[in-house]
Every structure is written in structure tokens, then in C-alpha cells.
Length: 88
Image (cartoon, rainbow, N blue to C red; front, side, top):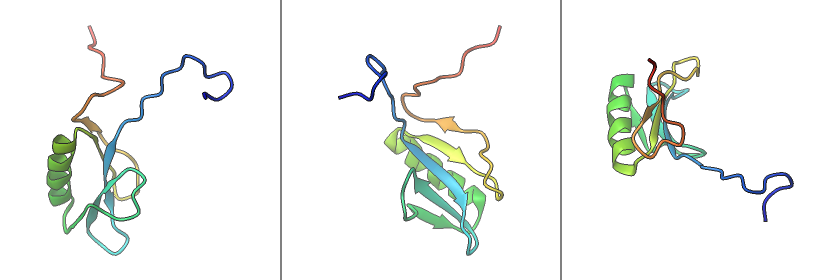
């Protein structure tokens, strides 16, 4: 049963991997809503490389964060429900 007012609405949940700073140092790659990291790396570059491999392998969105938590440029490796539109 759909929530009231949501009849006919298709909700697409995208799967995500996030590259986030670890409070104890280094960088983590985590799936969305995960309590534990999929991997821990000393540098952001290492975390990005590993996260990109995981994301490509699992067809997920790769979402890097800055040290202050702000999202940088996401990169889709799956069926993006909201692909970018070409500007003309």
C-alpha cells in the first residue's frame, strides 16, 4: 500500500558509495546507511580509486565528500534515475 497521495508515484532508490573523512584520520568508503566502512584508506585519492572500483562493480553512484562533509562531484556508475541533460 502506498502512502496517502502517492498513488502512481514511482520511487527509485539509488544505491550509493560515499567517500568520507574518518574522524580518526584517513578516508572511508561507505555504502549508504552503512554503519561500517567498506574500506579505510590513508589518502583521499586511495579512497576515491577504491570507491570507484566498488561503484563500477556494483553499479552505484560514487559520492565524494570534502573534509567538511560537503558533497563534491557525484559520479554515476549505474542506472542513474536522474541523468544529466545536455546543454545546448
